[in-house]
Every structure is written in structure tokens, then in C-alpha cells.
Amino acid sequence: MSGELKSWSHSFGQNCYHLIWSPKYRIHMLKHKQLKAVCRGILKMIAFEEGWQIHEIEILSDHIHLFIEIPPTVSISSVFQILKGKSSRILRRNFTWLRKFRCLWSRGKFYRSVGNVTKGVIEHYIQHSQGSWNYFDTRRLYTVPEQTTLHI
Image 1 (cartoon, rainbow, N blue to C red):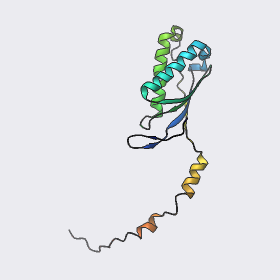
Image 2 (cartoon, one colour):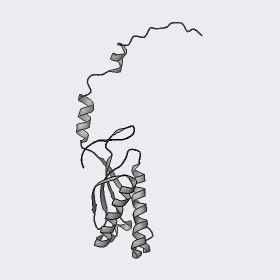
Image 3 (cartoon, one colour):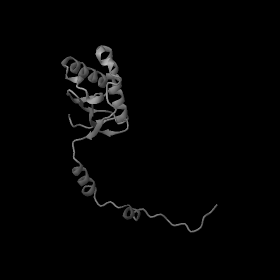
Image 4 (cartoon, rainbow, N blue to C red):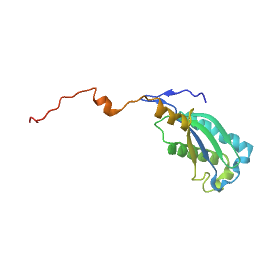
């Protein structure tokens, strides 16, 4: 991961996630080298089509780890839906023996946002580096004349 922030149309930041999902019943279907290679290629192709950036991918025999960067306009549930749905369809089309399984991927998933800073760094930044700004103190700087009667 480059660690650089990206500029979008109305925002500036980084939106990276660590995603994990597994095959239905955690069957070890991904132990086959050919299936693993095709699955890796499919996931990279889907990410490219969607405009997402995969930083790292690891396919183990019974689950997949993916480190991905997505635009802030895309929900994490949509990412899972697209990755799991399209990959399932393509894998079943090319590996007929996978069609015997009613569902290819389990419904479960794991996700966690990932960044260059830790929770402690963010807490420290919010608590200490914002100065002593106080809403009530700044109101005194802008004096507004009080109006006692309302003219309608």
C-alpha cells in the first residue's frame, strides 16, 4: 500500500479494508492450484472492472484474505456482494464440479477498515492537536445586537 491519500470529487482520504470470506461449509475447494489461480485472476479482474485497487490477496484452502481500496461511495456490503456473486458465477461456469454445491460462498464475512494510523494516534490527535477551541468562547468574538421587540 502506498499510504497516499486519494482525492475524489468531493472528498479526500483513504478507504482501505481487510476482507475475509470462505466457501460454504468451509470446504477446502481452494486447495486446487488451478482453481486458486483462476480465483485470484477473477478477483483481480472484478476489482479492475469496478475501479477498486487490490493491494494484497491471499487465497488459502478454506478462506480468502483481500486487502482492497474502494471509493467512499461504495458500501462494504456491495463490495462483498459483487466479489462473491461474480466470482461464484464465473468459477461455476468454468469448473463444472463446483455446480454440485448449492452455494459457493458462505454468507459470513469479516471486514475491518485499515489505515496508516492506529486508534491511539487518532485519539491523541483529536484530544491534543486541535488547540483550545471552544464554541462559547468564540461566540464572544462576534457580538450580535440583542433585539428586545419583534417587528412584524
